[in-house]
Length: 140
Image 1: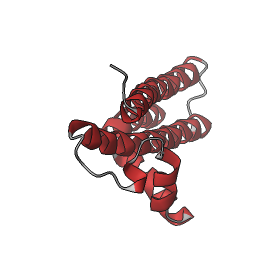
Image 2: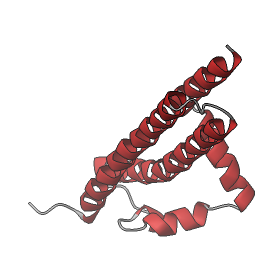
Image 3: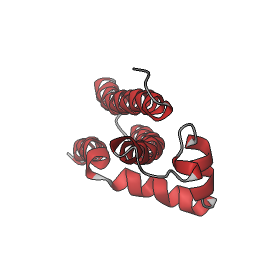
């Protein structure tokens, strides 16, 4: 039995989705290393805080990319679950970029999307905790 085009696309995107998760964890690990290094060399200050905030925003951008893949995966899963559905043009396999292009908004919306991702608990928690440790260390 040959896999359908939708199943092939789903496998590819699911692999990418999982890969994004691994790299998001590496960004968080980099944040831990930045703070640890700054503390070890007694340079925990504004510069370290700036780097931590930058890594937090980078994590949010990365997760925004991942959320675009997730949206496409969910569309494909609906189609694959019910082969009798009549697919619209953007629901058909291999329409990831077309689908995104049609739903794309302006630059302000993109920045807002990044900020919404940054505030999600699974993204914010480690970054807020690290910044809290930095500020707590600077105060004491």
